[in-house]
Amino acid sequence: MKQIQIIDAKNHVGETVKIGAWVANKRSSGKISFLQLRDGTAYFQAVVVKNEVGEEIFQLAKDLTQETSIWVTGEIREDTRSKFGYELGVKSIEVVGESHDYPITPKEHGVDFLMDHRHLWLRSSHQHAIMLIRNEIIRATYEFFNNNGFVKIDPPILTGSAPEGTTDLFETNYFDQKAYLSQSGQLYMEAAAMALGKVFSFGPTFRAEKSKTRRHLIEFWMIEPEMAFMHQEESLEVQEQYVAYLVQSVLDNCEYSLDVLGRDKEVLKRYTQLPYPRISYDDAVELLKENGFDDIEWGDDFGSPHETFIANSFDRPVFILNYPKAIKPFYMKPHPTREDLVICADMIAPEGYGEIIGGSERATDYEYLLEQIREAGLDEEEYSWYLDLRKYGSVPHSGFGLGLERTITFLAGIEHVREASPFPRLLNRIYP
Ligand code: 4AD
Image (tube, rainbow, N blue to C red; front, side, top):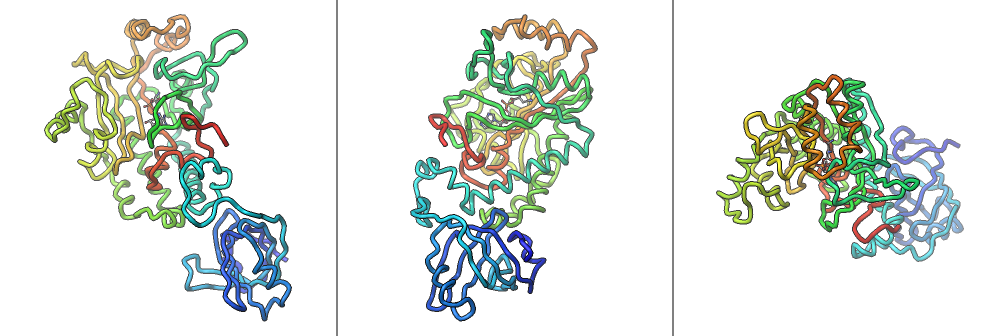
């Protein structure tokens, strides 16, 4: 007998098939039982009729408990009443693994309880849908950069460099030398861009940030493209095309997940419209002040309420351009006419989802960069390899980093970034 996955049911209407699945839910009424089955690809209903299967199998079906795993055989039928469109007319059932007192029941549970049971919570329909969106964003990322002539490069995870500041590093002992878990692969990606032109990375990054917000993870995945012979304006075009591509890919390939999560597809469609608006840091501060924000002064970094207000002033993601030099990392290119600014941009997602991209044009001048490294209190010996890039054929180059989990949160329309990671590392949580 043919073994199939639930997602392929549409190709087997009228056939008798075998499926390995878990019992997500069950209800019985008299001589008929309805099993809600899931196999990782989708959910659908299996109908067990006493007169068709006989007393023994009917009783077995009635006694099945939540998350019991089974082999089930039956005939695939169209089911016009369900959104999925197909169901299984059960012929036989064989229990594979019993499940007793499954802790996550259809009733409401608190977040701490769910996080303690993350290894099981992942099985629920919302979490399943979010992971499918995560997978689609990763797939579309490779497709976008491969289609546009980028080469995938893997920067190291154990490193001696601290591109984003020294305050939130995870330190480890590397054979009697200090090493850190990577905060960003950027500096290595700059070296790679000088070797290969256009490159991108996709890997885990770590920040020991003591932030307990709905946007911060301790371990998150970042996509970091870096492009030689490219100024910031062209980099912004790559960024908006990339994000619009992600939105379109999720719309095209994740309809089921978006429906489960109740994400409004018409709203998402707006975010495929280019270009995305640009506002300068200077103007953004003015905009906030005009609208009653007394807690912001020129020179401050934006907090979450500021970002949300700026984002709500536009109908799609917005770039905030050219921040004060004093609040940005050492490697950014100085503004040609304003020495208090650097050439950079953050992309802020709409609807309060916050910053999803940080990027900049990179400083190209050896002496300038050396001075910045000294001013940042970094050891210039440790950065001499990075300075070499400005000694041997320095070129204008730009790049950016997109946070995977923040982008998932935005596209899936979910409340908290912790649900965008299969096993999130949070402040005070490294279990399970
Ligand atoms: O703005 P960030 O710190 O930029 C960099 O690391 C650059 N070196 C990237 C580059 O130019 N190659 O971080 C980039 C993005 C943010 O916009 C955000 O989406 C995400 O990484 N991010 C986080 N996501 C979850 N939890 C955190 N603690 C994050 N910190 C940054």
